[in-house]
Image (cartoon, rainbow, N blue to C red; front, side, top):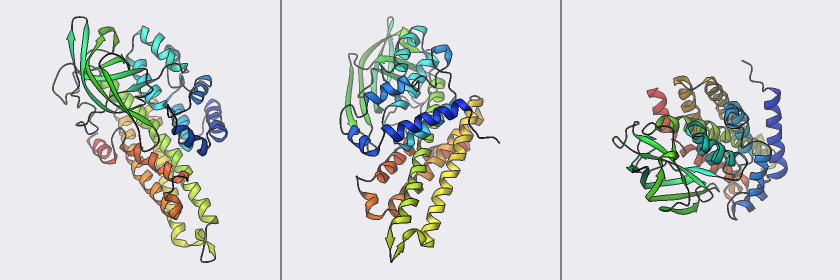
Length: 376
């Protein structure tokens, strides 16, 4: 099979590479995450200027018509710099749902502002009891005249502190774990009844716990059809899994290459530790895990590019399983082979490992997707 990129895709890859190498040094990233809002607004404006914020959206909604392949390319390069700007929460998740289910007013308003970088969003979908099951929703939305009134709790809302709008799945009918009966609502993040508790995550991002108490939302702000939001949510989460999995592949590449270079220069017993055969085997295993994950990334992206279906969903779950296994193996061994240095906050190795660990738990961990793959 031909895995070579088109000319446009190669230009995209090169532009992101240049940005990471020139403007996203590790020391600068560390300085950025220690200040509010936890990412660079200047970088976000650059993303908009270069068209990256409009990349995944179709031309029909004002985007650049990118496919899952372009998202994969972009996110893999982002992973090499462990980029903290909220691309996945705003563009892939919230923006993706607005593009799929929003009205023309939503597309010309909120989505257009997201693509120009002037508005940010977040998807508030995680509930404590759900255990990765997207259909397990206890947040309720009841009709009250022409409006809906939403009450409930959402945890780990990535980019919650900076979000201008929230997309909230809530139950409008059915039992707690029914796929039918879930409705998606677009609401102002500062609306009356929305209470946020903001906190930093272990991998340097920002998130919120969101409590909704009698939040009124007009029926015009329903995304898609009432009671039929699950299919949209499920589709966009698959897009997000491809995105964060591609990011993980970029991080794995940096980790194994950094470890190989370190082992060539770190001396013990009068010679570089990279000359010891047992460590050479370990580094080869790291490389093999990375290559297997990258192969599954290509397969998942191509299956999704062909269209949604069982084969695409199987490929995404298989990719997520491999991302979790390989990320743990490569991260642990990178820290181990760097010795005591690998445990320090000043070295980038531990920060890549933290990000890979968090990616494993997002949108379903290894065990969850292994079971899902088997069921499919």
